[in-house]
Length: 62
Image 1 (cartoon, one colour):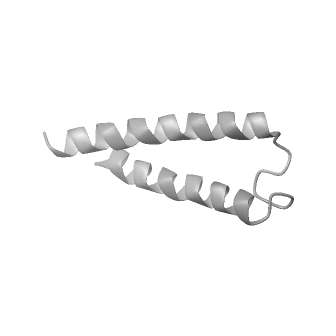
Image 2 (cartoon, rainbow, N blue to C red):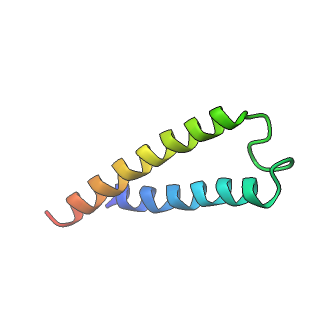
């Protein structure tokens, strides 16, 4: 159940990072990242989020 909550929180964090980058790329939360590092960070955070959500959903239906 905690993994499901953490996965939902991670969706919020990823949304905040992407929103701040789209809204103002020069003053976003991740200013010092290049485009390649930004995409890599989003991929890693997305994989962690998918893992947390999938294990949270699996554990809640046991």
